[in-house]
Length: 376
Ligand SMILES: Cc1cc2nc3c(=O)[nH]c(=O)nc-3n(C[C@H](O)[C@H](O)[C@H](O)COP(=O)(O)OP(=O)(O)OC[C@H]3O[C@@H](n4cnc5c(N)ncnc54)[C@H](O)[C@@H]3O)c2cc1C
Image (cartoon, rainbow, N blue to C red):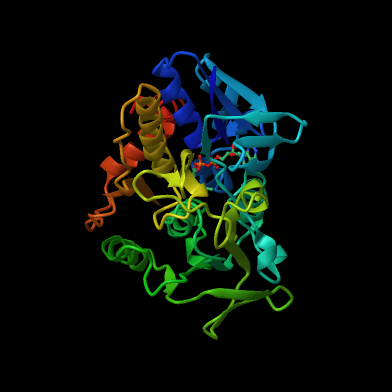
């Protein structure tokens, strides 16, 4: 019996397992190892922070129920991956051998890398979002600074989106005139892609959100409530929200599979790890110079499932990833933008509209069924 082992059962891991299960490859076991029995929908963290979602059971499901019955799920933590000997060592003491390995361990946050980070808030974990919500509810006016602790981080539009949604939140609370919102961008523009940056800048100007280009956060002086940039600028704040720096998963670093921050180097088209044609990495875990986004994990998962399937039936794997990214940015007041691009074609300048707001709602709704099953 052949074994396909998937380490990490988040967005990418769940999609690849379900697509492979539907292919009904004979004499092959599909095993997902995930360190939690729950699957949490991370894009909802922003809405949890802003109080649009309070009931957290709506944004999590049991991973077992999201996986095809033919997939075996082990709730365990991978401690070491040995690609030379095709083995994965688990915290429980088990040792898995594999014929194909897919690493979809995502990323982890490392706030401790920024001196003084304890004074800041974030919405990059459910707990962080919950605490930020309580803080926002007590906040009655002053300067809110939203910054970025390092690149890359999950969901590039998230901090700009959060600024726009703060404008909406304070407007609803009728205290918008008492709040100054500042967006600290580590780039010379509001977003990595120029055309999208232009739309976001226009939206920020319309909403009177102050944005600071080239503000790479170096340290936080919590006593004076000042955030300092590497470029020598400082900003006094009353409430600081900061995307924490990200790194690859611990198991990737421990297994020495990652480069520069623990990101796994893979071929940008085949998603294969170095010369190990049976080892793939997908989603946030890779070092590909594209967005760390659920849509990327989803598109890549389908490519890898197709490649492994071809190999098992004796065909040359031909499916390739073209760098496709799709994402939305919600601006509040029921308006959003949508962007879609790939390695060859940068995004066009998007327009904020109600239609794209509805599009984002649809994705949120169909995440659990169509998206995680790999049907769309
Ligand atoms: C606030 C926020 C907003 C976002 N908004 C969007 C959005 O609008 N659109 C979008 O496309 N994306 C968005 N994202 C990003 C998206 O959630 C991630 O890019 C996506 O989940 C990545 O999928 P993945 O499979 O690579 O990793 P994940 O979904 O993070 O899954 C990784 C899994 O691996 C497990 N794991 C890690 N280490 C081990 C180990 N050693 N052993 C076993 N299991 C392990 C983890 O527990 C987890 O279940 C957002 C993220 C955040 C935080």
